[in-house]
Every structure is written in C-alpha cells, then in structure tokens.
Length: 461
Image (cartoon, rainbow, N blue to C red; front, side):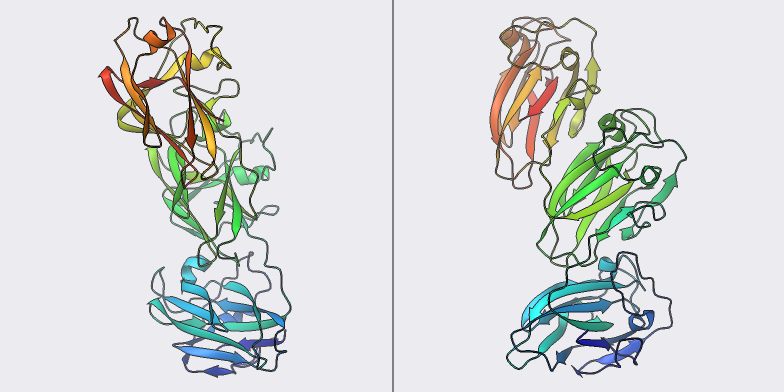
C-alpha cells in the first residue's frame, strides 16, 4: 500500500493511526464485525470498529502527479440498524464516485464489512483528495482508506448459496433481506444444465418475499450477467408455486413456475439475465409473490460482462413441455384466466409453415391475460408467432377476440375456426415486434365480439 489509514482509530496491522483528514469526528464500537467471504483483502476487524463521520476530507500526499492509483474505501455501519438511515456521497479528486451510498444496503447488514474500489489519478500536487459529503440521510462516515499504486482488478462478483452454507465456489447465504430458509436431502438432477451449481446449492433455498442486494466492488454502470439457480424441492406439480423476480427494478420473471421450467421436481434449472450495476455498484434482485405460493431461489451468480442472450422462449400455453416448447410461463391473468386441454386429434394443414408439435394445439390458456416475454435485447426486432386451434367451440362466430403486441392491436375479432377452416385445426399468425426498453415483448389478449380469448402456443424468434 502507498497509504493505509484506520479512520477514527489507532494503528492496527498495516493501517496507520488516523491522519491526513480535515473535519469530522470519531466514533467506535466493540461489536463483532462480520467480514463476508466476498470481501477481498479486508482490513483488520479493528478498522471496521472505528470511523470518522461528519463532513470531512482526506488528502493523501506524497504521490506521483499524473500516476494511476487504486483507492479502496472500507466501511461497516456500527451506529444505525436499517437501510435508509445513512446515505451519503463520496468524491475523489472532484469526481463523485458514490451517490447516496447506504452501507447497510451494500453490506447486507449492520456490523458487516464492505469495500468499494475506484481508480483515480494523482493531481498536479501529487495528492488524492477524498471528500465525504451529505446525501439523503444522516452524515457520511468511513472506516478505513487504502491507496495502492496502479490499477487493481476488482474482486470477482459473488456466488451465493441461498439458504445454505458455503459449497464449492458458492459463499454461504449473504446479502439478503427478508425470507426464510429450507433444505432437503433429495437427490437433484442437474443433467443438461450448462454450468450448473454444485448439487448442494439446489438442496437449499431462501423462500418468502425477499431481496438480495449484491455488493462487493461492482462497477457502477458496468454490465453483469445474473444467473439464478432453482430447483423445486417442496412442491410436486406445476402451478403450485408461481412468482415474480425483478433485477434493479426491471421485472425479468413473471409467474415463474420452477417445475414447469425444469420439467419436474428436484431438477435444476438456471435463468440468465444481463443487467448493469446501479449508481452504488449494486445489483438488487427482488423476489415477489405471483399467482401461487411464495418465491424462492437456490443460488445466485453475478458474472462480469454480458452473457450471450438466451434463445427467446417458445411457450406451450396452458400445457407442459412439448418438444422445444417450454411449459406455460410468463403469463399474468387479468380479470380471470385458466388452462384447458383436449385429447382430440389436431389437423395441421400443409399450408401451416413450421407448426408446433401437435400437443401444443391440444392445450390452451383462455380468459383475459397477458404474456410478458423477458430477456430480449431492447430495441431489437423479433418475429412473434401465435399458434391457435379451436378445441372447445365448433362454429364460426362462437369465439372472437383481440390481440395486441406492445400496445399495438394486431388481431381484431379474431375467429380461429373462420381462419383455420374448421375446429381442431392448427393456424399460425405471425407479426414483427420490437423489444421494449426493458427487453420485453408484451402480448395482451382481450375480449372481442364473442366469448373469451385463447392461445395455444407462443414463439418469439
């Protein structure tokens, strides 16, 4: 280290007693400090038990003007007990690097260490000036400051075993707020899951309504890939658990059903999303209630960079996995909807290009509903193929409904039998759509002249 300072405290380890400051006061605690596994190169515990707080500056002298340095700021909240009670700003050589920084939100709890890393250049006087100023709540503070020569690679983002102990590269459960834990000794099938977590990760879970705030030196505004690991270890059938997930405020899973996605109980499935760290260098993952029971997650990975986008989904509306069509997912019932199926033989006319498997046309989602297709590239063009077969009514005029895609009506008083020529006969309607700013395509099914809307399958290409 070029400099290491125990803010507000005495010399400890390689950290010098508090120096090079202007303004502020000091405070300390004897509380035990938790240092999570994801905090790379932490300071001694005693550093996190002291602080300088208030409005203050540190001016680090004796550096080489124009040279590159890494500033590592150490924090632990030792006074307040909840998110939102302390939020402050930090600038380095006049550039704001933290805005409304909340230590508890970043660390995952009180008396818990967290570090933030920044690259800067010494000014013309060979100094690095670190300014701590008021934000949205209370006063700034810092536990320790390190200045290192050159650029230091940030630590790898964490992998978390939700609800469980450390296993392989997955740290013990951390960075959460809310929820409970559950585990099983059932054998987990990870066959066919690319880069699956260790089986033990899928044997534990955090469930309920909860949030993970992933800190640990993420770069504000930088791109990351979030991989969410799931296995249903409690329920045994499709439809018993359906929940929503948002990442940094953008909903990425809607009425997600683990068994439907994985194909069975005790089988792993991974959902992958691209996002950017927020202004505090965090990724906030929120799990909220959907159509049935409570949310859950088995493991969380955050990987630097953007993953190759997943293939857009094909969905068997109202039914289970059928060929390349996933079990029904990503729907929201609006004013009531349900699923229905038949064993009737389905006619697939020769004029229907690239039809779905027959089983897709033998099931349906009906009523008033919306499909929210996530995980697409904002602004990119896609082809939406809607698959239909009338398996309930037998005459023209008995079902007529409307469909809109991203707010544009694409079908008006659509009559499946009139279009297909007969009941139990497949027909496909294709449309071009642009993914919205959240990387989604929203397909709304609304009432027309007769009965209720329905759909058999959805493809996004």
